Image (spheres, rainbow, N blue to C red):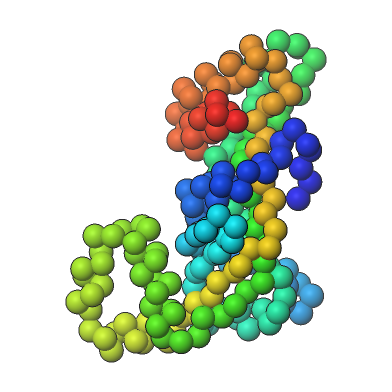
Length: 201
């Protein structure tokens, strides 16, 4: 993506933390020359150097059949907000949009055995509802086996991370303070969630 120098998010640990927080992402690949996308919950892990994304999609979703060795893109987006020119000191100003986003590129590897698929499911349970693990463990194995067969689990080993934090960096300290106050007091939770990024970024 196009990233002006002042908006670059270059710290890998910060990018990983963002992806983990906003882990429902969009997987984009190409099928017969046409871009296709699926919206999926991802597990994001890192050992400091290697970043890995794991997820699953429905076997009936044909997107996985075209992956082969192609590189895919996974788009992680988070809070965003319209920024009104009324928040600026100079009257001759125009509106803009502030946001944070990370694009992860890598090659897909299918996890085709039942054990690997089960591990991907367990990862998502651990992230989103650990208390559900007990119920999952008591479900009939026949039911779980049927569920696993209906899924395609996969991992993306990230080769390139591109991050952007467009947070009114070009505005004055007074204007940025006004913008942060405006964001923090919004009735919209998505807009409010952007304020800490501006404060820390």
